Image 1 (cartoon, helix red, strand yellow):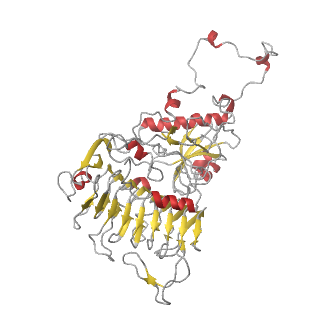
Image 2 (cartoon, rainbow, N blue to C red):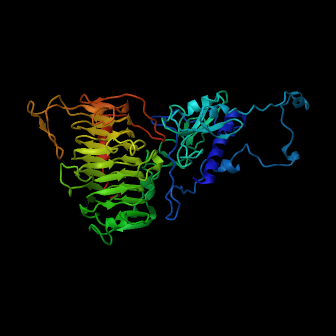
Image 3 (cartoon, one colour):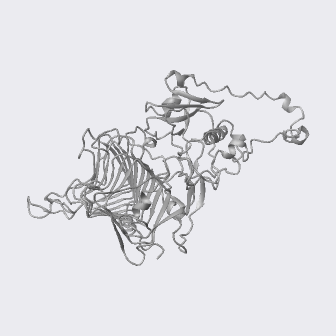
Length: 588
């Protein structure tokens, strides 16, 4: 993190918390009276905004956001927009204080002197073994690394939690690249950066009409209908521009949310056009994806007729970092394996993905595989910031989309069908490469997939508004201390209790499917396919059809990003079924 970003972030926090100590000095107190954001809707309990980082230029340092829009804290750093910070002025220009019509000129001399509050005492934080990073008159800022949580950190000094941020690994500093978190409910992280203040300090939420994100008081400022949060500002959702090709990168990126929200993909100004269906060579998809260039990849094939790109079964395509596959408005099928090995910032959108090169009913070759080196927190994975969006996935060798080491992934609006195993998250139950994996699934349509929607070990998975239609064995398996947050999903089991000829069963329609007599109902299962124990899950507002069941146990995480959950209804199920998958007719 650059020094100016960290300074700006802390300045913004200090500026927001200054209102907590002296609400009269709040420049927004009058103009925003009664205008604080409404109580967050579904998903808004997850503190933080969706800070779109823009698209970095080719020579931009990695992990550095590039945006011309000032971030909250930039102005606070230099006082430009802070009405409580005034330039020095001549004494006669400032004038005498207005004491009211009944006050005598000497009334202020008779008043009690203004006694500033004593600085907060932060000693208890260090005494309990937490790392004290910064102390101001009204706050203590510290980091815990033992999973205790910011409430416990602040209580050690007799204070209360006023704000939570993710911390930088091995540094006593906040991570300015990530949105703010919540004090309550706790994050469940092993480490965070905490801001503590006195319990009796009053805090006025700082929500203006065009601001979104942290309100400085542990809450969140939201946006109105038809708006989205970008760079901590509420902006209108713009119309799709269909006048030119490639289509608007901004329109695509505006559809991103969830754990993969930092993903920007390739450089829209560095367009690579796929002109060949060949496995390799000039104009091939392989040439673009395996290049070190930050390519935004589009297709000059597949417009007037379907285009199928066959990948050599013995030579998968290894996608390099900073790539976007943008298949909007094209009918593109990629047949073979795509691998993401130690790479990041990758978008795969609006294409069909299959692997009919590999023998069916074997453990050979996934359709898309994500692997990474061992890591102990999401930001340390080599493979991270990945977005799979509006794709169609079917008929692969083993798994359709396996995350065997990686994090900060969003999987959205995809159509999954004709396959035995959809998604695996984790590596044979080993904690090393899966303990801190974070994945969001939303608005996916799983049609008669046998199982693994996903099967997960140790990871944290947030699933909302997905449609699990007639899974054959189970929908979701949560094992080995994994955490699964399910909100507004539709779990539709098969009808009845048995199927087919007694004790023989009926045929599973998926490739490699077997015969089953019993009709399984498990939407969420916490025991199946575990190696080291049960998982944890919570179900909030899910719709269970045909006696589908969900198992719940333990405490799970709260997402650190904004999202909105639609009620789980039959109408939502129909909408997901109709909209999910690739958009070959986009702008057509």
